[in-house]
Length: 169
Image (cartoon, rainbow, N blue to C red; front, top):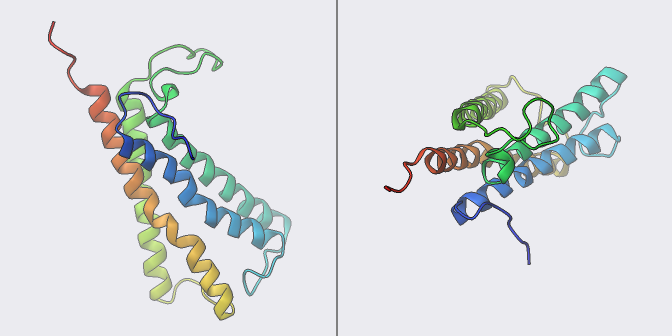
């Protein structure tokens, strides 16, 4: 059975949602890596050094950003890990995590909206392969639609948990 690791005061749904975010971004990253490896996932493979570097880095950066969602339910989202120079051991101010996370959720929402609009307005070139390639592309990118709402929900739970008034003494 899969064990979801989170702080004791994190709601179970928030821990599950935080762990789902990196899983939601993984299929699109794997599809891009397959594209770079010249596997038959698209009509046109990626050619050229800079294009390959861009596609690989897009996959790495998007997965790294998705993994940051785990900080909203793990100890390193409340206290900076000791191994980080100058900041290690200091508490994380709630808004230092909440503001970037909500901006990230807004950015991902905007990118998804633009991609949807561009595809159906004829501005995108995503679906130009065989039927199987297009279906694979769609299946790999569809989970990305969950990234923004999951991140926003986990961020709101983090904010509520970290800024709730303490018990009266």
